[in-house]
Length: 271
Image (cartoon, rainbow, N blue to C red; front, side, top):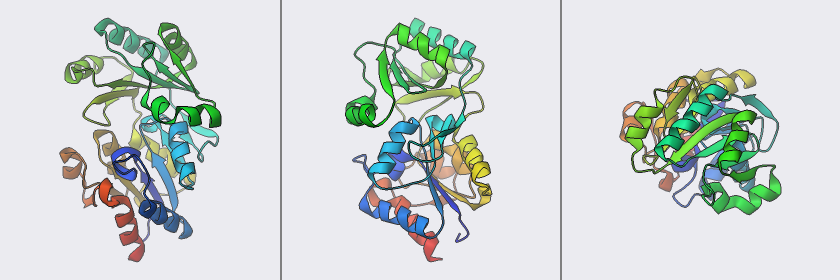
């Protein structure tokens, strides 16, 4: 375990505690790993700029993978080094399908977070809107015209939250060619280009850094983390992870409320 050269961690339910913060204990463990020459990186369903600000607020550096592997920054708010857009034909079909179902959704695109409905604000706008607007080039836009513009520009991810019929919605969306469906909580659905997931993000980051995936440790708690956990040499499930994640991983740690990421990093460094 002490030959790990890369740590890649999910955010919500993993790196972040239940209050949505990186605790002092977790921050110190990540900084200690960096002092030992280990690269620390985030891999989240959130878009890169959102993740970047969380890293920068805690003084953490390292690559940022966003939108479940659809985009990657070299460092927080640094240059984008990977982009994987949903094919325009598939994106238009997803849009049409959701509109016909009357389902609201959000879109992550280059420098845009788009809401399909006026007045429906993405949670990053609610929690970090002023900081995002002042420190990044991301803008929040709304309505059908904004959705159409996003399709023309290129879409990383569709995000559907708590529409009350998620299983039925998922079954319908899975029939659309050129896209893949996953979830990061029991209350949402997320769609990226076919072949894009956190596992691919991890492999692309390893290739970029010239680090074998066998030397990577990854942390996660939800369905969308499973591809990443399976590709890493050490895939670690949080104590609060979904049962399927716990069942499919060999390594487990404490919950995010108990600084599980920090506990496993310190265990690894001590060996």
